[in-house]
Structure formats: C-alpha cells, structure tokens
Image (cartoon, rainbow, N blue to C red; front, side, top):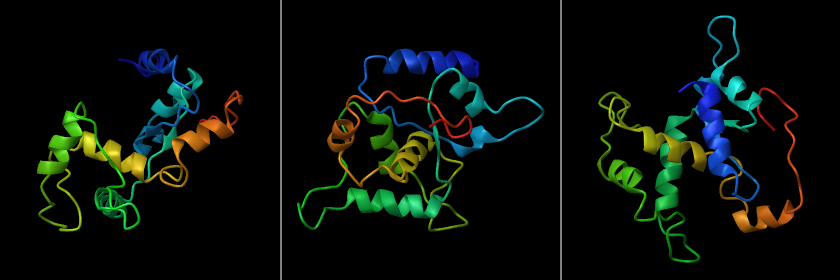
Length: 152
C-alpha cells in the first residue's frame, strides 16, 4: 500500500471511534530520503495524526516490565491484554534477549507487536490520566492539525 492508501484505511477504521485518536508511528517514518515528503508527512496530509515514537529501547523495555508488574496500590498489573491480542502475548512470552546487549531484546527476532507496545507505553500521554478522563476533557473538541511535522 502507498502511504496515502494506508492513511485512508486508518481514517476509515477510526471513523466511529471517539476522540482522541492518539496514534504513535515509528520515528523512522519521519526520515527524509530524497526530495519528497516523508511517509509520516504524506499520511498526515491525508488527515491521520501521528506522534513520533520514543526510540529509547532500554527505557521502553523497562517500562514494559513496570507495566506488567503488579501495582503496589491495587495489587493488579498496570496493563492487561485481551485474549484477541495473540501476537503481543506470543512475542512478550518468547522474545529473546540480545546477544550483544542483555538489557535489550533481539532486534533480529520478530518484534513488531513488541515495538508497537513499547512505543505506546513510552508516550507522554500513556499512564498519566485515564483515557476516560482525557475523553471527558475534550468531549466537544474538534481537532485541527496545526503542525505538519508532528500532526497535532
């Protein structure tokens, strides 16, 4: 698919979702190779809003571990997965450690779902307020893209 086609499919899938549509995209999609716009820029022109991912792999891995551990106040995990989230459950359970950096996972292994989880958990929005509080605060807000680079 082209970036335009993918953006259109995302917009179609999000059509009935309540605001905000908070989406994180691998920061490499902002790379400019050649003379044209980046993949992220093309998709944002179609109307999809993106936040670049945090590239700190070690801190991201630590955040995944923190979220999987029980919260000391509620005695429950800070994150839960639905049974339909088969890819991430499989990857978290079996992703090998890096042979060169024991603090990281093996980036040669299948890690797309793991990376997507890490990107979302490392966003500034994730974990500070419940999604219900955020939705309530912007219930009647209509978002207009102000910045072509970051999509918000």
